[in-house]
Image (cartoon, rainbow, N blue to C red; front, side, top):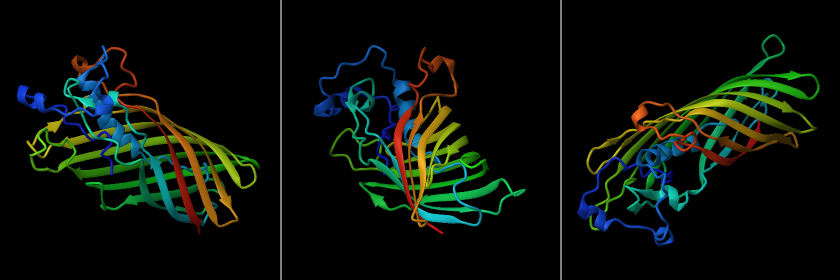
Length: 296
């Protein structure tokens, strides 16, 4: 899957001969180097971007199911393509082929349990992408969430949700500079945790909702060619938001759709590696997510 941003070989210093062989996408060849380009910003942005693409937002209302019910289905998390300015690496001497897939698909199951105190409905959900080879990559993504939701009168609802995701990608991510060199797999790992507060308003079978929360990311990247481990000096730790609608159609099909945003944030691990005014530059994501499921 996510070749997307998984270049992350930025920590490898390029020799003069290597730079001479560096390849640039013809579509990006005439793009001038920005005055504020920074190697660490570029590396950390892409490390965070991949993890945020896999973050397990709910795509559901504050009370996802009536007590004792659940669903089984498929969710699709959009992965917007990156422009040339995000694909340049190694001091703006090389571009990476990152835009391989537009979505992260997962199989998902959810269940709601009997209400606590006759009011609060607890629920759990899990989503999984098995390690199926795709476009030269092999990705595993496992997500889980738990929460509580309650109705506030006839239309309004409120909920609290905790979510977590772990993702592993094995692929020739960094790629070789010389086309004659053999492909060697690299390893990307990430974990994402978050807490969301949800509010909804039911209108017939449809419940529009808003989710506001906090998301925390950790990443690891190992380059197979030389055993180098790149560092993410500013792992994303900041706000997240989703605006969407959850609907039960014909009492059988559960459909959800949302616009999701991670506008910016980071842990300042090393002030010497921090660029002034870089809020959001170390990682941000704006995307859409869909879910289709069979109500049980």
